[in-house]
Length: 120
Image (cartoon, rainbow, N blue to C red; front, top):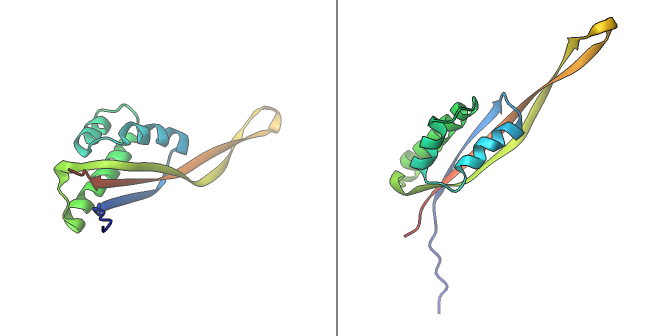
C-alpha cells in the first residue's frame, strides 16, 4: 500500500527593517495567524495599531505572490504562519539633567507571512 500525501503549496513574503519593536509587531501578527486571507485583510485594515499598515501591505504581497507565482486560488488561502524576528537596534543619547545622558534604543524588526491553500 503506497503512502500518498497531498502536497500543499505555500507562498511567503518577508519585510525587513520595520521601525517598531518585535514585541509590538508580534501582537499584530498574532491577530492574523491561522485566519483566512480575506478575514486577515479585514482585521488589519480596521486595526488601530500603526504597524498594522505595514503588516497589511506584507499580507497583500504574500497573497499576490501566491496568485501570480504559484497559481493558487486566493479564495482558499489561509495565513498558516506569521512570525516576527529582531532586527538592528539604533542607540541614541537623550540629554538629562546635571550633564548626564540617557540611552534611547530604537529597535527594528522583520516579519514573515506564509499563506497556503486550504485543503478540501
